[in-house]
Amino acid sequence: MSLHLLGYWRSSATYRVRIALNLKQLEYKYSPIHLVNNGGEQNAEDYRRRNPAGLVPCLIDDDEDFTLNQSMSIIEFLDEKYPSDIHFLPKHALERARVRGLAQDIACDVQPLANLRVLQSLESFGCSPDSKPRWAKHWIEKGFSALEKRLQTRAGKFCFGFDLTMADIVLVPQVYNAERFGVDMTQYPLIGKIHKNCNRIEAFQRAHPDNQPDAQ
Ligand SMILES: N[C@@H](CCC(=O)N[C@@H](CS)C(=O)NCC(=O)O)C(=O)O
Image 1 (tube, helix red, strand yellow):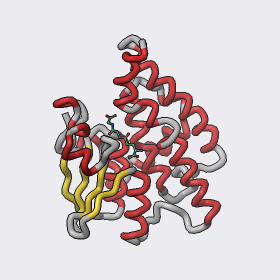
Image 2 (image 1 turned 60 degrees about the vertical axis):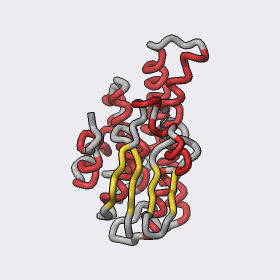
Image 3 (image 1 turned 90 degrees about the vertical axis):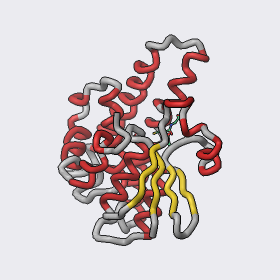
């Protein structure tokens, strides 16, 4: 096994994969892809050969010679390929669908709207530069308001009862992102509580953007 993560310290999708790798206690090599310098290294030809979408992260297995993109697919792959005491998805089909639903509430319906390339495009559609952070904050708050309600019937210590799941792995980086955009997290007490519980776990702490070699 020779895992190699290509990502960016502040990328929430990369942060998700770091948490999953740490929870599975997997060692990996890390290569930073700077999303801003040089017009964004994710747009460079050699990176686009790996991921034509020009998005991070990518997980490469150098021994078996394959590359994976899409953080949630990577997380599920790690869960299946490296069984351990921690399972990112429940065994029961209905519960699995619910956990995936919670994760997708964030990964499909919130994060893409405030992604760098979306924010960079806003000006070309006539929006003022100062509307960019307001746009991001708006969509995060809309997503978190709905999630906070959904969690009222799902959450315990974590998003789905008392077991750590993929939903928590996706939630924590989104809270980090929300705080960057000045979202007042006291509006979402359940999300705040789960975030705090996750961040007591060493695997989450080590995955934090500030603890990455490319952190600025
Ligand atoms: N759905 C993708 C999202 C990947 C994504 O949006 N990556 C962002 C960083 S979090 C990115 O590479 N942005 C670069 C850009 O927008 O140019 C995943 O989960 O892996």
